[in-house]
Every structure is written in C-alpha cells, then in structure tokens.
Length: 504
Image (cartoon, rainbow, N blue to C red; front, side, top):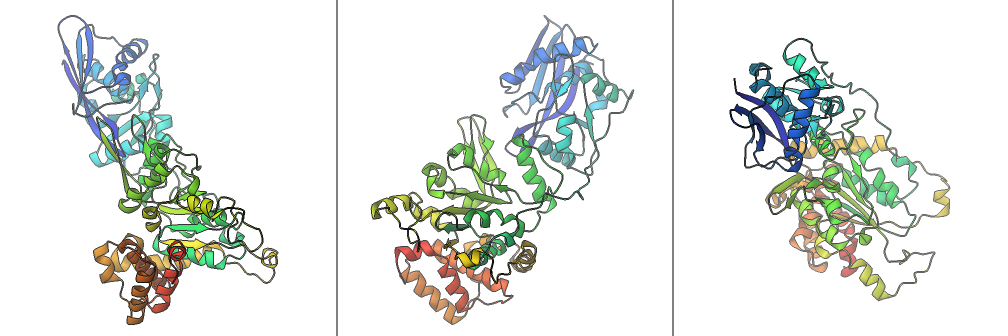
C-alpha cells in the first residue's frame, strides 16, 4: 500500500487541533515533500525522519514521498510531527501495518539516532485525544505532564524502534499511570502572620468571597505584599476542569505541572519591569502571558504605577472579558485570562504621603503625576480601593491580639461562595449588568445612599455596579438576601480613589 494515515496535534492557543498526517508514495525521482503550511522546523523534519529511519534499522523508500498535514489552511509549527511522519512513511512503504495506527495519536521529535525528544504542550494534546477516543504515545518527559489525564491510555516511548515494536505487538510500551493526587501541597502563607490590619483583612475576605479585584494603597512596610500573598489560601480549590485548563496553559509555556496540590489556585507576581507582551502574551508565535498563567487564580501587581502604561492598559479588556486575544498578520490566538487582580501601590513617589510618622517630601505635582500613571478606566475596573495604614508598635509587638488563621477565614469564604453559586451560578463580580438589578435587591435606605454616593462621587455606570456588587457580597457574607444601608456604606468606603477625587 502506498498511502498511510497517522494522527497528531498542533497547538492553537490552548486548543490542540487534530492534524491528519497523510503520507503517499509514488514513482518518479526520489524526493521528500511536506505540504500543509509547514514552517521551517516542520520542513526540516525530512532530514530528521530520514536519519532516524536508517539508524533504527528500517529501509528509507527511494521513491517520491509526499506528506500532507491536514487541514492545509492551519499553520504547522515545531517538531511535534516527526514521529507521526516517520510512522506514516513506514506504513506507506509496507514496513508497518497501517491499521495499527488508526486509534493512536503520536507526538514527539526524532533525534538522528531515532530516539524521542519532548515537544511540550502534551497536556492539551492529551485532553483532545481523550475527547477523540484515541490513545496517545509520547516520550517520557511529555508523559509526566499528560499523566494528569485519566480515563485514557497514554504510553511513553524512548525511541522510534520501541514505538514500532509496540505497533507490531512485539512488545508493549509502558503505560503512564495517573498520579496520586493525595500528595500534600506546599503550605500556603497564613493570614495569621499579618498582625493587625483588620480593615485590610476584612477587604481581603470580601474580595475572596466575591472574586473582586483589589487595590491596596499605603506606605512601604504596611503589609500590602503579605496580604496579597495570602489571598490564594482563602480561595477554594479549583474543579478538575478548571485545574486541567490552568495546567494546560503551564504546559504550553513549558512550565512544570506539579501533581502535589495541582488544584490549588495559581499566584503570579510579575516584576514591574515586565513588558506588555510578557504580561498579556505575544511574540511572533503568540504565547500566553502572566495573566493567562494566573487563569483561575490570582495576579499580584506590586508597585502598580511603576509598570509600563501600555502594559497596564492592556489589562482592561481581559479584566472584563476573561480572555485575551492576540492578533498577528497571519493568525489570531485567544487565551483564557479569568484572574483576580490584586494590586499594591504607594500613595506618592517617596511613599509617605499622609503618613503620621514620616514626612512626605513630594510636591503636589509629583504626586499627581505619580497617581496619573494609573488611568481612570483601569481603576474603575478595580472593585475595592483600600488604604492600608501604618500599624502601632504595641500592635506589632503582638499585645492582646488574636489573629484568625487562613483556615478559619476560608470556611466563611466557602459559605459565601456557595450561596452565590446556588443563587446565580457565578460569583458576584462576574454578574452581567442585566442580572445585577435582578439579583441585588436593596432596601430603600440602601438605594437612596447609593444614589447619593453616585452623584457626589461622580461614579460612572461601571462604578455604580461595582459598588452594588461589593455590597451584595457583604450581604452574602452575613447570609442576608437584601442589601442594607450599611452594606452600601462599606462598599462606598472601599472606593478611596473616587473619594479622593470628590469628597462626600
């Protein structure tokens, strides 16, 4: 038979698209052609396949070889098709039975001696292969990532020869066993480590309950970074589907996927020198950025005004849509980016504006220029603006204090989240504008206070709904169906940037 079909996968964002590797042998001068929009690394697989077949003891057919990577309108990149192409050549030349490869997918780069090398992004391919009802053969390194998938067979191979003997049923490749997920995760920072800062802890709990974005403003050393690092310990573990989606993004970025505590929510803290491409994703071949690596978790931006303005403005769309779309001249790729933003900043360049102990040496113009680095549209997308003040020495020495642990606060967070999910299916922060009015029932006094605050603070429609959502979360924490006046008052009090612009 001069035709053979093998199966592989190409990466398109977080999706692993099916690629049919069609191999045809015909008469004529010996040649080796690969079609189907292959990039340079794919075209170079001709030489890797030729050498791997010969050194593995197979005959390389001296005929006209044509390999088509279908669908032909999708760009093919990387070295992941080497194994599938080599097996297709062997099947088309009669050295392997074509039927043995119909229900198997192959991923792997071939060395010149026929050994297999990892190609990355194996988890996304394993998810897609399971949905297609096929087995998967990868090298050992990729198999470690793909092992997160259960209810399918994943085999690991060391070389082309091992794969061929497996297909000929001369030997059976070792099947990768799903990992044991009862391994303890690394302990997360505990909220009890933060002494005092009760208002900040209250705001952090509200943010955790409703999935709200939070901006902390205060002098250096007041515990802003400590508070942010403890948010992940207040959040519930991810579901299996969410955990797989998050792990698949790490796999695409060639980052290790740990099996211990793999459902814990990610916490990403990029440096303020990060470029827009590093933060939101990009490159010639679009890759996920920090906001996608923080998908289903927390993104902490310390020293917020020090970030490049273009990078910060690029956050506006993902904060609303939960996805980031990267467009290039030849392709458009979309990555998930549903993260919870926690940001921290100083009130001025020196950090001590309004501090009761240390004197601020910044002029009003310097302070205005510093705060203006964060645009109004971005601050409007942040639900809670919190001023974090300096603590007294007596409190820091731990006198008469009893700090709640993360475990205690986490139980309250879980109850509040269950209440929201049972009522509307999503957290309060994700409510659509049309659903907010129907879900957020408020008393007359609460409505009147909200109208007064909206007028005097000059809140936009987005700011109005942000206050309403935060107030609804506060009511859910107290297991009340209706929003009361005190809920609105507390939510408005957490809009410090709006209050600084116009005083009530």
